[in-house]
Length: 91
Image 1: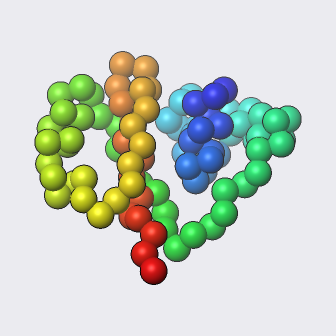
Image 2: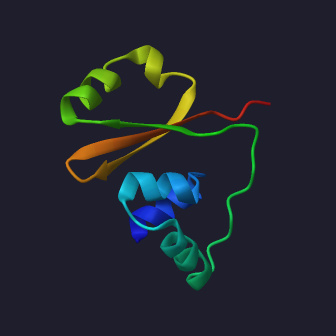
């Protein structure tokens, strides 16, 4: 449940959360309602995500081009890792 709510706050859709975690999107919507989680504000960006194994994660983090000009969140997803990435806000 906590992982689903974290993903929701990162802007991942209910259906995408369902595909990633194998939890019904209706359950996620009910948790959001139950715990009064406010919908994330809409910005001019859409986060992207990738599912990587440990080796792929290490290779990705070694790539300085991938790390620059963006914000990133890495979270464990079973035996893999999910990297959520978005561009930084610009004035």
